[in-house]
Amino acid sequence: MRACPLYPLPLLCVLLFAACASEPSRPAPRAVERAAPAETPAPERRTILFLGNSLTAGLGLDPKQAFPALIQNKIDSLGWRFEVVNAGLSGETTAGGLRRIDWLLRRPVDALVLELGGNDGLRGIPPEVTKANLLAIIDKARAQNPNLRIILAGMQAPPNLGEAFTGPFRNLFPEIARERDVALIPFLLEGVGGVPELNQPDGIHPTAEGHRIIAETVWQTLRPILEAMNETAE
Image (cartoon, rainbow, N blue to C red; front, top):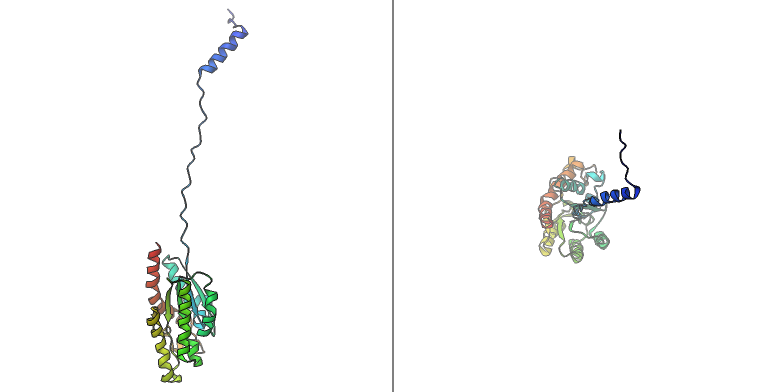
């Protein structure tokens, strides 16, 4: 048996170098970087301010049972991006609402549901004073946002105050709606006021069922306004 011939060491180094040099170098594969798709930010929720008295506040009930909260539920069920802010305050008059409006308007407001005047009627405040206060609230709100949508809730005074008072009081709400071109809910307590089973023992503040009826009354006027606002936002 013959031994394999051995190459001299210098020649072996040359052959190994040539073998390595003859194979082209391959660049390391690069990871493919894909840009993450840009996320479209969700539109901000627009604000609906409910400025009112104990009716808006839902006196005697869980706040979730008050008609502004029920309106929020209706809005959410449609997937519309509106946030209801309940600024109801028990005992509030139109004068009190006028004092509060500047503070409330420190946040941007897109729609205002103005539910004031009931306590003015109960206290026998002259209708012309109530009207002047409501007009001033509307003017201040529009000065903050000229495109503000305003819904005025009409009220009625107790009949025991006499027609000389109740007539002008009842008429001041449609008068304001015409003069300032705002939407009008003719009577907030339609179907609820004076119905014992729909009011708490005081005979003034609605029960939870009464608030559900009020929410439907408000929704009839408010829904088309919000629907138009929602379409312009898309």
